[in-house]
Length: 255
Length: 257
Image (cartoon, rainbow over all chains, first blue to last red; front, side, top):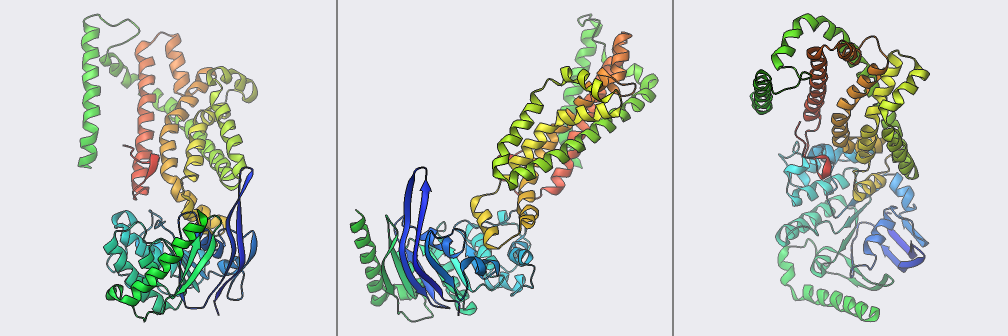
């Protein structure tokens, strides 16, 4: 019902007199309620692709549908939650006021009470704290709670834990999986970590650079719910190797 | 309050030390006739107090009105610059041009246009304080990062919501900074206008005292303007500390009111 459908999506940027093809011929269907990871080398356009789905940018060719709607209609219906690499919290607002921001902007009743979301992301007791008083990991939890405030049909995440240390990052990933299962949203995660992509996703789209294209699509049929010990499973390693091979072949053709 | 007193103590001591030094220098005959001893200035206060209040109130009113007008025009122009990106540079250039005109030379021309009434004083006060307010507000409106602007786009915020929930709060530290710089300039603008044409105002009082070579009264008016400027700065800093309760990043932070 809120599948994300990408049909022959292309994106060109004008840089001075040159035209740069950032993305070309992207075809994919991300089923409703699934978890997809986008992985690829720097400059492969994975963040651009995420911004095309969020209607921050418009594709120069092809079509994107979120359920039955174009991205701009979905955005205006407040069906898109976006988590940036930086927490992008408003420093003058408290934790709970930051989470309430999309509700205020939409002017419609909160799908989930901000206080409840604070608890969901494990920040109970910090409701009235200002962002500057929180650690990087806690700030990013607030950003995730904010993205969930209107129960969006799609949750788009652009390397949300990229700035965090490995231990915090793995904890956050497990929490994120729990939140995703509970909300049933269609999730797309941009990452540059192979193990993160395999651990989180139902399918990994491997992009190659110059121009950004889907080099491979790897289905991850590991059981859920997933826990940290899954990372020691041979099946996990096999999937990691498959993603790595796809990334490597992409690098080779680009070189 | 104790912290406030403690921070006010060093400057007060410096001023007192300076006054004592001047007193001693005057007694030793080291100062010219145009510089009175601090006690000579103090001595004329009782006789001049009613005049000082009468003229001071006029200057304060002109400066305040001019400051408000400048703030309104700066805010409106900065909003235009925020909405239409291409307008930013022409608007800044306009502000710079206004700021570059030598006010002291411009004042007589304005007398011809506006007469010698309050309109003249308010106008020159507004011109003097306009540019810092404009620059601060424009700069403040720019103090949002690309991801946060994208966030507001994804949330489908209206332009008014963007202004109210993002641009204005983000600009406040810059605006307060500009307001502190502009307040003494507004007083200076009013003072210049009163030199050129006024029957009432500290500038007029200063000119009368100058022409009658009443040196202590000249200095009394100068010190009064200094005091009013410092007071205005301090008041704005006080409001700022109550309003800006969050940690400010970037070059708007790190002020000591």
